[in-house]
Length: 220
Image (cartoon, rainbow, N blue to C red; front, side, top):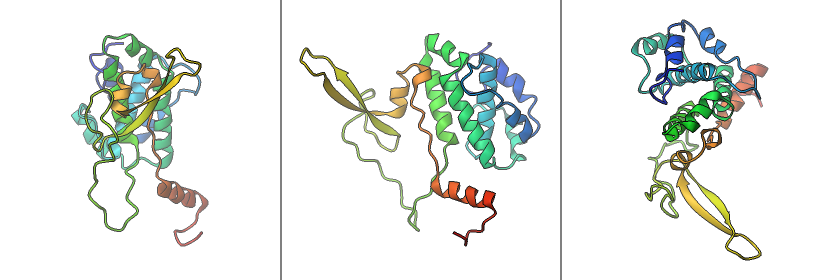
């Protein structure tokens, strides 16, 4: 696999695939891997490139997306619910069950791949609207303590708490909890075990269910 970076279009397999993308069907065809099977590196790279295309269709393109591809994607419209779900599932498979993930685990800089995947997940997540009628300016989240890795405030970044059980010689191990930015934590983990912070929009799910059942918004 010829690669010079961790992002979606920084490898030969992805760029070869880019030249074949003419329609949404070409993107869907990239998502043919079966759950539970290890995905080879080139196939995984094509899946990530296709996922980047779907993110671009959502209006969140990667910085390294080829200009000619970005122009083509304008005519593809928004991804439907099936394509978006398939995309998310396959990105998750690449992260947890692929040769690409293992190759990056053995590299000198696995954090680059981990952060690239964390960013892709974020751009494939829904833009969940606030419930209030008037959208309020987003405030910094409650920060109980600085990030255990970068020692900076949590701010507006995704964060959570991780817990360690430490044997200090007693009968019971001690529980030590630490707060961390998801990206900071992911940068330190094996690629296959990064935190995949997938989100779902309940309103969008209900709307799609109504569409499939042929119901209008006024119906229960």
